[in-house]
Image (cartoon, rainbow, N blue to C red; front, side):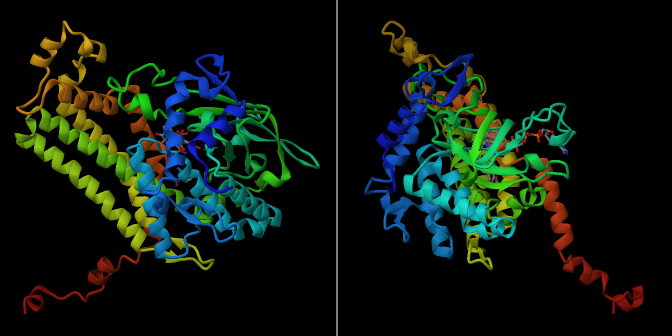
Length: 492
Ligand SMILES: Cc1cc2nc3c(=O)[nH]c(=O)nc-3n(C[C@H](O)[C@H](O)[C@H](O)COP(=O)(O)OP(=O)(O)OC[C@H]3O[C@@H](n4cnc5c(N)ncnc54)[C@H](O)[C@@H]3O)c2cc1C
Ligand SMILES: Nc1c(O)cccc1C(=O)O
């Protein structure tokens, strides 16, 4: 089949009945649910974009294996040109949602693509696992499916490993092995967009210890598989708020969920890893899933940061405060942060290496630097936005006020900005800003940048320890190795 249209994506959603829990009730049909309607339409637009002649060449290519048109996120990167084709596609997608939707289809396409491209790793442990991930990649690519993923154990008792939790199945693990597959039980988080996806893939960040064998697993399933409960967090919008009042929250809410597997059957052909602590711990560092999805995240994060910085500049300009040194200094800092991320991205792409298996991998240290800097740069942009908008962020009228004929003259007189900025423009800019820096939507978008890639504190510490282990310290070694001379000889 190859690339789907938005309508095909929606038809598939309508045909499915996943067990989605929202605000204490079971959702009848996700498409008719006001909370999900607009986000579904935003995702549908991304599928449609693949058919738009203005974007098709940036987003898709003809698959060598099938002759069908497929998304560029499924392209095995083998050269700099492939890397840049993927980069362009990530950017086109990110621009559609201003980088605010992190788990658009291209993210997990990249995860599965990197796993399939590196199936040699799984093959070392089990030939079937390698064959299964290759077939799953084809299934995803050729049907253009939309995936969610859950790779973190819920925060029950972080001081203990999975097998030490009070209940054996607090964390997701295998409860039974059958001739035709495995039965899994327990919970996994934090499946963004789960309710409106086609399928789910489960694997884990490293951290398994001996005793954790039953939890060391990777598999995929349709999202409406029997026994899979999807419990959504409290929504940040209810589908009734206008795009005037909440231009971002009304469109780009990415619902997150906890997944609970209640004795769910997984057929062997959908199992990619099982009962092997070593393989589970090496999956992330060895299979490119630390790099290919991070390329998507880096590009998307760059667009999101650039967007937040533009909003901050517009807020400052609209009320004439960017003439003050303190404000223009802060804005200059933000503009430079965007430039830093752009430069890091280009460096990571340019400094690719070809692995012994023919994969073109971005510079991992530069990618990790993006992962390390964004949890500081994005919150800083939001903090500056809050500071510059100050009290004005809280006093904007609603769309209903704005449309009230009796009120309108007062609004026009008192809500305008500097010369040339009328009340409507100022209100729109400030409402955009509040969605980003005050609303639950904006706080979730901030929390996403802090944690989407794991705990930034431990990741930085791991980065330093790796640096210490591998770095030659040649600069310091060079001066330390110079022969010492007395004062009289040194000055000669
Ligand atoms: C908005 C959002 C969307 C997300 N979407 C997804 C998704 O789609 N799929 C998915 O799988 N995941 C997703 N994630 C989850 C993400 O992978 C995790 O949040 C991330 O890995 C951090 O783990 P945690 O939240 O369990 O925090 P924890 O690891 O529990 O950390 C909590 C705190 O305790 C400290 N801490 C915990 N353990 C240790 C330790 N051993 N040593 C030192 N300090 C420690 C940390 O520094 C941190 O301050 C998402 C997260 C967010 C915020
Ligand atoms: N955050 C990630 C994820 O959820 C899946 C795969 C990779 C990452 C990452 O940031 O490296």
